[in-house]
Picture 1 (spheres, rainbow, N blue to C red):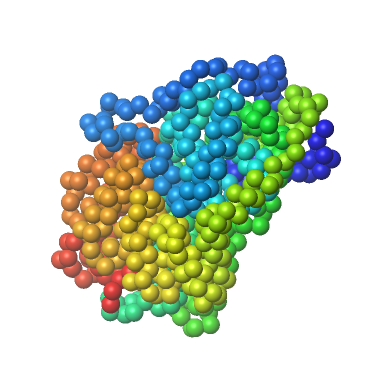
Picture 2: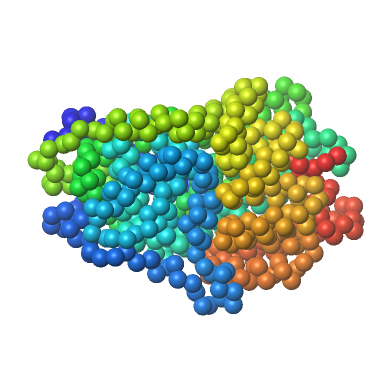
Length: 556
């Protein structure tokens, strides 16, 4: 039998952080609208693992290239590593942890009737406990934040088994692909909308001229925008449907028990997820930072209409997500239902089985290995730098951020992004951009690194350089849909309407639902913004229609 503490509130906690990833904004009332469903294990006799068809693993059908596009690469699925670099904080320099985790994953997979699935563990720099991710080609991204907060190998094995199950059961179908691509495309439009709206409105409300230096408040506002984008990028991860999550839960429990781990660890691991989600809500940090901006404006006597610019930009970005939210979010079995179903299944199939001792020592030994301990210290320093910055302790933030980029993590994308955000907020644009550029020197630069570097070049009127960076990201990340709106906008700025329209048509071909209209709309919006930007001064600068507008990187 399970301990009494599992039978009460811990079984009914709301694990929103794992199962709903809508960029730091809660899906209020979603679970309340769902009606209790049938227990998934009631559909089968015996254990779920015995119903899984044995045999060699085959790739999901959606991994095949489509012949509908003239450019077959345009419709190819991103590789697992490209997905990891698009939807997470990016790979961390943690070979020791990866070897340890790979052994556990291999052990779990060896007890499955599905053989030969190419499971490959990648440790990523996410602080978020619930951002573990499985890709169609077998890559499993494990957040460092999860390794920091779990207490034993059994808990870790359950989460690994859950992701292994998604791969082995070939859950990455066309629905998964469409969900991921549509989320990515929506994020691209939202990010572009935020930048354009903020720059346009800031220029309008502050009444600045091109030679006027950016105020500290303006920089604070832009830093808030970058922080908001970082949190909202969590929304890139696609959701699994109800049946897929049920199947992954049941198979994960079967796998850890057959591999000799404690089945009870599944429930303690889920409880830790809720505790972590409650104490590490980035939304609270963003709200605190926005309050800081408001106080700074009030105390300094700055133009109060600046907040109108900030709120207008936030509305422009948020309106896209709000409009698409219903289309991008699938119905899920509530966390309470999932936990109760898993508990009932455990009682039915494993209640009388002896429970092995938890494997605490091996996990602690792995974390204490010098190489692993150093990497963990570097990332904790970076996460603490982020907290210090949002709490207003600039000196501490810089010190911690500088320590985080010491060897061996000196080029890790997430740590460089954190330092970039701090330097940008300090109005040290040159040093800020250097952090972005350093992150691109390796092979692991993330989508958000490239996006911010693109905007940095745009801010200095270097549209050709921005296009070059965008094309680099386009190639390295296997044509991420999020870059469609940005590339289209850049080509309109560069007066290359032919290429802008070609990209819009390609995007529409690959995204035939309402989101496919995003790219077409981007062309018209970019053309309108270009006309509006040129009108006041009748500028003949065809290279950059935003040359008179505010930018976080504009040189004066």
